[in-house]
Image: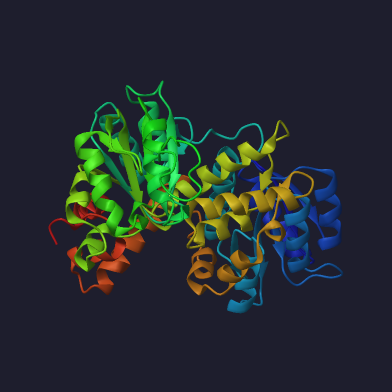
Length: 457
């Protein structure tokens, strides 16, 4: 049983809806226009609002906007005899769950109400208040709900105890350093140092000295002996991020250090042994750089004994809300867990995330900075996300047809969206799954695993 508020200036409709919903044992309250509904929303908790659009003095669109501010957790279904696509899209933009034109069929109305209540329950379990479910975390800080990230975590478990060199690939912002930290933490070297270095941030004239150290007098300004990062990482792990930025002349020295486990400082004559595990990462395709002649082939194969590929966030939509929840938890500092508006959820799920997980974290920090009364609403989002959503008819049409939540669990919905996206890419490539996998930047095996029924096609 749910508590439902109905707002309509037509007494006949109010009476009809009241009888229909009471027959399903719901607790129903009636409001003859939007102003009355607003007063009730301020004083009482409701699970669902069903509102006509054309009302006076407060119409349904204004009531919807005010409801999103007053009670962002309340689902909203809009009713109207003025069934235009533009009105429906506007209602979806403002966070309405669904839109039903008058006259309506009773069974369709009840099905929409059921879906709205099921969806609100799912969101409450995922996001809101004290009942929120902890995101699935591996190795402390890696959130993995999607198959892609679960596979990454399984790889970490299997290869962390080994001594082999590991290459981590993935777009900027996908979390390569987190994976490197996990590899170190679950290795036999966990008691030793973990030293990350961004190779792209080191000046080309200093990178050799930073990695291998130098002796006094090696060059102008070398007034003392300097310990390099290889030496500082003794007994631990050295994480070489953006290794594609290593200058070509220095790559041969790095190769020798990895092969022989010995280094020689800049300006020095003696070699000495180092006990360091190398984990490298690149946000560029190293095989392509090898073909172009800017990255040594022998170094590439030495580094890529085992490769862990982190998929971009756009390919793992199941991770978006759990990651958002994880970042909210980090920002809370003991305060009550905030409520996230439906409109925000739709925008987050339909954004393409060019900056990946790092961009999502920045967006959550932005929302937490500007939220009011413990509510994350559309107004707290960076404007570029809102503009992107409003310029994306596909996202709005999905919401318009009720595709955003059809009584499914959130995880099931997101997997269905991923499946739809994969099929669209395959169709774009003329049914060629090899080309589709390349376009998606995943392996062919991963594509078949995600679309098992496609194997025989």
